[in-house]
Length: 268
Ligand code: MLT
Image 1 (cartoon, rainbow, N blue to C red):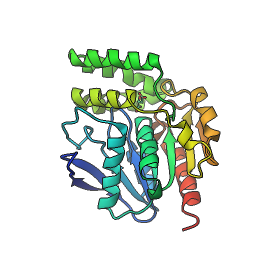
Image 2: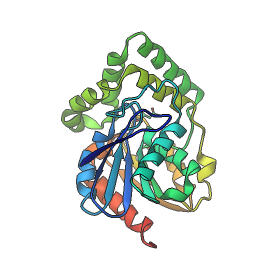
Image 3: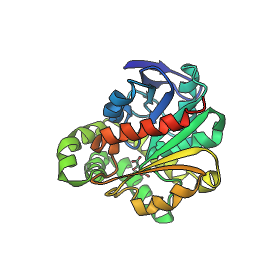
């Protein structure tokens, strides 16, 4: 993969990776990880597509001072990457927080989209309880509790002992690289994000939903009603899968993204 960096008035550094040629898919990672989580999926898709994988500002190699961040800011960073690559239209696949970014992108730049994939993600805003829970985490992080938070949260991302054995340690290591200030900024961005169901309702944007049967973070039952909001919906439900299909079911995910990409690019 080729590594690139750009900057803007808002972001001192946006790092992203590119592989392959063809119609474009952008893979947006979730919290508190970075673009490297998509590695296995990129291998499959880059044989046929141009795959762009940003590190969201404050994650991975996108080192930034981001005390004040919104999901719309993150969408802007993805938009800057597309401009830099000369890409007029793409499919965006967002994992969890990355899905919140993809929905913000859909609102801000609808003409740049061929479709979006909500990978273990939701259009619903945080409940009041969830906001309180996030605020408790923010004060824990402010008191130096990043490591204990990460070590407690990451095991919940995976289904069953098999996935945990394969991916837990490397994912904990990856999450530990995220600076405390970024974790706080991402949590505030998620607390402040709006409910975007009404934007999806009766919209002609093609949306694919990737759901893990065993996802504890965004449970299947919390998403399933949203999957019929738009006029064009693809729904993929994976057994023995938690919140991390790009690792736990990477072959199936690459296959299903290919199917969705074929649909989205058919009238080109
Ligand atoms: C994520 O995986 O990006 C986050 O857990 C999403 C969230 O906390 O809402």
